Image (cartoon, rainbow, N blue to C red):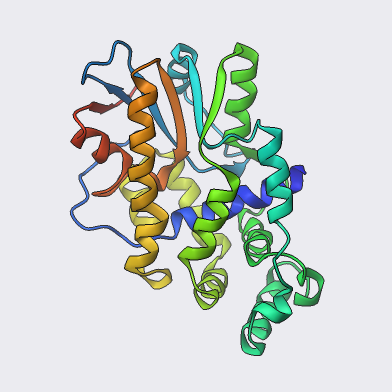
Length: 286
């Protein structure tokens, strides 16, 4: 189950970050942590951008983030991985609805086989029963170049349990699988895998550690891998739905939201949407 969690989180990184650049994006300060206040709120809530997964040697959590988390009364993630039902659903969805040998064309299978051999030493026959999303995760995990991975979601869940505060999710595992499967064609997924290399991941991690939201957004948006339809499915529609849920939650208590960093920026990013809804959203710089 732990390995499946790693695979799914890796899928969130690759799909959640390889999206098309959005025009007219407001400039954001260098901070992964943002305070949400005003608009009738009695207490501030917090928005934190994660990279989902990172090598242990690169993992960090700033003091400002720890303070914000400690002052919050509820943790909200994209998916509540502390829920056994969600973890069980993730295990089921890791397997494909049909074998890849039936789902993909001979040309696609050959290309995927080449990528698998090059990156993992495996063949397409060995993963024939997996979903393409799971195979994609197996491949992209290798780009981090380490075996000791840490997951921001699990770190926050562990701390929330110690504090005995409620944990929730903005989406379900099933929701995200459907979203990711509908967002890309098989050819687009394979093209993404062919371009998923250690150098790009290292650049992403370095920029993330600098908390440079603008540069992070520039790096993780790439028109080669997507379309307007994909951007709408992966980012815009989800962000709009999240902000509706966020508005309801933060009226009741102080909430710490931890979501993928790619969702923070852009015209339809969570920060800009919350501002348009009347909230004051400011970076916490120290």
